[in-house]
Length: 280
Image (cartoon, rainbow, N blue to C red):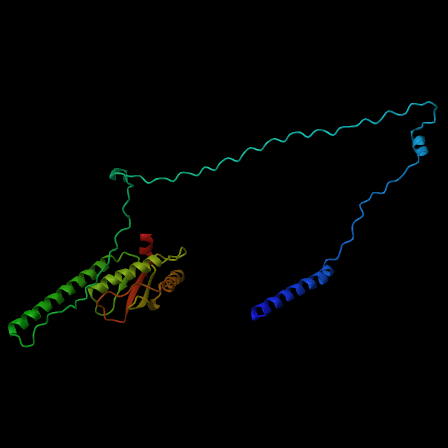
């Protein structure tokens, strides 16, 4: 017996042994379930009881008619449901083969936003020509004459401005500027006069129309009123109180004109009741 035959013999013996084990052990896993008893128990009723139930106690009585058998109603046919309607998909919109002409294109309104105006400052330095140091006497004389002419022109304009202020002395307030002043300050004085004249509320119980109150007002370069005080009262208490309320009410005028060098300036203001009532 060769080696291959030995292997086949061992395999056959092992297979038969496995079948034997399955035959012996397998029924233990499959327990038989008890069979249900489906026999019906019949109850026997004696005949005499049945006869007594049908007997009415009368001899030769007819038995009751048999109970009619009622047939169940026949089922009515159910209506057949309608078949579902097919879903119709919308057809895709095809783009036009040709573009519309220019006449049919939508009109686009131009933007109504105004163009931005950009202010570009001129950053070039201003160069003022000054006569050179080493010039002839004739050129120096001409420059001196030109400066004198300009100074006389400014002085003349300033005098005319003061004259116009004096001519308007019929207004409710007049303004005086102590010290030297320029034409620009004369215009600034008219601004001071108009503000204080507008803010002055005259009293109704004044004793006399000739009341005149003189005050002093000091204004800074930026237009802030630094101080204000009464120099000469009018003698009428109600008028003086109204003037003081005006001084307390006004705290800002306007910045000084360009070219001014003073840090502050004092103005003398006259409050005239008669002129105020005439203007009102």
